[in-house]
Length: 428
Ligand code: PMP
Image (cartoon, rainbow, N blue to C red):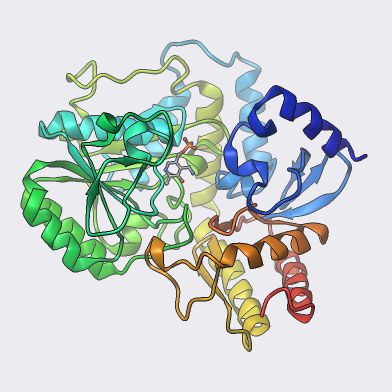
């Protein structure tokens, strides 16, 4: 029996499904999760010594790959001086300064420990700032596991409060309106009906947790102008797409400036970090300056701040978006050539995010345009890839992540395996 299997057998007795985050459990692709031991650059190695080209990258944070020397050095240096004080530290000022220098939408920032916390806190702030209670979110956008954001829209233009998790009281989601993405007219109607009651609209800047649902500039710009007209704060959740776009941020991709931005993943370089930021006028409402309470024992801890600072400094100094575009163009051309005569599979890439979609004539822009039959094809493709050393996310709804440790040769290996999958009729 493999060591991975042995660990899994132990893990399932100790932790629900043996994991600490559901998608890791491989439920939708079958088989058992693989336990990793090491990572270096673009590759990860499991506890049995098998290596994989890593397209998961810890679900987004590792844009420089594993164990990047600058990040390793920063973490090691900071740990040698002590790793938590519960007081302000220099590293917070450095990371905050860099984020504010580079992000037009952020004049002040507050650090937290996860993306979930970032969104939860930004929405509390939006409610505190506007004095309104209702929020609007979009079907297919994930904002973490906050009670009132675990809401499914159902069908129809906008529905209120059907919780998509047990344990979330219906009363908690009554103030959350949900609607489909990419519905310009619906948006106008909804604002007419309840625009004056909305504290904020939360949207994943580039929705990438339920397929890659890239929105049109026209749609997002309309959303911005409706928010202005009705005094609603626009909250761009950049936890996943932030620092993964050719233009750095998702909001820059569409040419709008949101009122609040939530950050995570890349800004912590792989350590647990989230952040929210925006205009000074709004951020000044946070305790102890203002009346919106939000706190954290380990928030802004020096290890996470140093890892994030080293990651972002390298990101800007070495033009990571430019490097990714070169790699991405190589991948696009290679995938297009493999898939050219296939009709049931499509490929979409934006910045360092990519996604295979199935049985759709063009890239879906809303959750209900994603074919439910894609999962069965992806299940086979995923296994085929895994057995040949390609670690892709264990769900057809998750995107793949490129990083700068990858080379064109690495991507050529991936393309070879994709081509084999075509020859064996796994994709068609
Ligand atoms: N928002 C977005 C857009 C995300 O992608 C995620 C995580 N996938 C979250 C929020 C929640 O972040 P975390 O898992 O760090 O709580």
